[in-house]
Each structure stands twice: as structure tokens, then as C-alpha cells.
Amino acid sequence: MITPHRRQRVRGIARGLLIGTVLDRFVPEPRRGHPVALYGTVAAALERRMYRDSRRRGAAFAALAAAPVAAAGAAAQRAAPARAQAALTGAVTWSVVGGAALEREAELIAADLEAGDLASARQRLPHLCGRDPESLDEKGIARAVVESVAENTSDAVVAPLVWGALLGIPGLAGYRAVNTLDAMVGHRSPRYERFGWACARLDDVANWLPARATAVLAALSAPVVSGSPLRAWRSFLRDGRHHPSPNAGWCEAAFAGALDKRLGGRNMYGSRVDERPELGEGGPPDAGDIRRAVRLARTVNTAAAVLAAAAAVRLSPGQRSGSAEAGAV
Image (cartoon, rainbow, N blue to C red; front, side):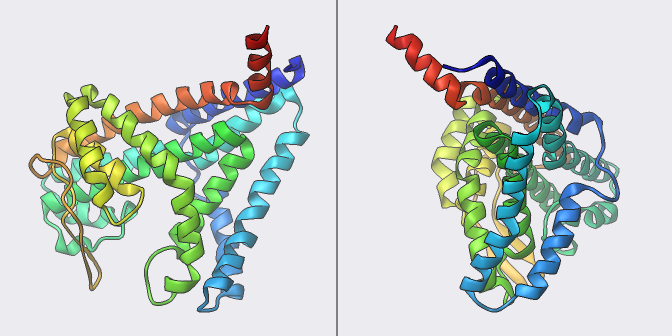
């Protein structure tokens, strides 16, 4: 049976997930000293010391860089009084969720394209993705932004909320560590092909459930952008599996269907050409579709926060045992 003390802690975690999501929207990230940026600096120093062209060394790096973060989160959650759980969880959620920053960057590029300032849009694009902006016209930049919004709605918002609902603060902090390591060393390059393998696979596992949850929420939210839930559902079930990423394709295909636009195709990453399957059935997106994608992402983020808070209460061990006892009676 769940005790009043345990109930207060669980409800504090649930409230904290909501508080942190709201703070993300209204409290901008600091230009310096952001916890995730500080973690990246420490992880980069560790990577320089540990680097070898070896999967085994890369796996050791992943464990040494991520496990202490999750452990510190667990220790902080245990040590904090029950009445402080909401504030602590809210602060950690704010530090690891990045939905508002993603939306702001996307809308700035949309404004550049609407103003006909292609040079400025190209200059901003690297803030969202790693494609070569000089090779892209207006349609290419719009597609890149919409795809980035779709993928990062899962990575930056839904995924940390899912892990926060399941594990609380260690889930929030641990997920962000894993995702940061993937961004640092998980990409394909001669240097990180072997060393970054473990970080990339760990991130794939961590994002498996959140990516599919994001796709489902995007399909259900399609009416906010005058889209069809059925078309979005059909798109992500038909096209999502064909993407080279085990997770990003589901999000991008759902957004493509909800917006009734076509995503995917040829991407340029410096001298490397990446041919990806097309997702969706409509025409290519434009600047207006960037704003629609942001509106869709914002709706998905809100729904994810509410559902995560509810799940945090429902999935707590004491709540599950209490529900079982009530059913037995």
C-alpha cells in the first residue's frame, strides 16, 4: 500500500514534469553555464583522454560518461525531502527539455524564408541540423527544418518526459546524458565509426519508445494543422520503417502525413551524399509549413507533458501495488 509520504513524492515528480515543461517555454536557456553544456564540456574532456579506434573503448566511455549522471540524479531524488520533489524535478526537467529553443530556431528560419533572405536562413540552419546549407534552396531548407522539428520533438521533449515518468530525476538526467553523447560521438565519421558505436546504439534504445509515442501523438494532433489523423497514421506506419534511423523515420513520417507534405530525399553532409526514402505523399514543404510543424510540435509537447505526469503517478511501484490490492478487495 502506498504511504502518504510516498504519494507526496510521486505527485511531486509528476508536478515537476509539468512545471519544467512550462518553464522551458517561458524561461530562456542561459547563454553560458547551462547544465547540459557543462556536461558536454566534461564529457568532451573524458573523450579526449579515453579515445581509441575501438568499440570496446567506446563502450567504456559511454558507461563512464552516462552512468554517474543517472546515479547522481537518483541520489538527489532520494536525498530531497518529499515537499521539494516538485521543485527539484521541475528544475531538472527545465534543464533537459529543449522544445521552446527548437521552436524558436525553426520560426526564425521561417521568417528569413518569408522575407526572401535565403542567406540568413542558410546561416541559421546549422543550429538545427548538420546538412550543408549552401547546397539547399528555399524548399530544401524548409524540408530540413521540418524534418529536424519532427525528429527533435522526440529527442528534445518527448523522450526526456517518458524517462522522467518511468524513473524520475535519474531518468531525466540519464537520458539527456545519453542523447548528448550520441550528438558528440554517435555520428558516422572515420573518427567515430567504431568509438561512437556504443553511444549511438544506446541512444537508439533510449529513443525507441519515445519516437513511436511522438508519432502517435503527432497523428492524433493532426487536426491542429488542418491535417488528417488517418493520413498521418497511414504515413508513419507505411513509411517510418524505411528510414535509415530506427527512430527518426517514425516521427518524420507522422509529421509528413499530418502536414500532408513530402519529406525525405537527398541530403548533403559536406562531401557525403545521403539518399533517403520519401515520406508522405504531398508536395515539398515551404516556410509556412515550418510554422505548421512548430504548431504541431507544440501540441505534441503539451500532450506528452500531461501524459508523462499522469504516467508518473500511475506507474509508481506503490501506486501499482495499491491498485492491485484495491482490485483484490
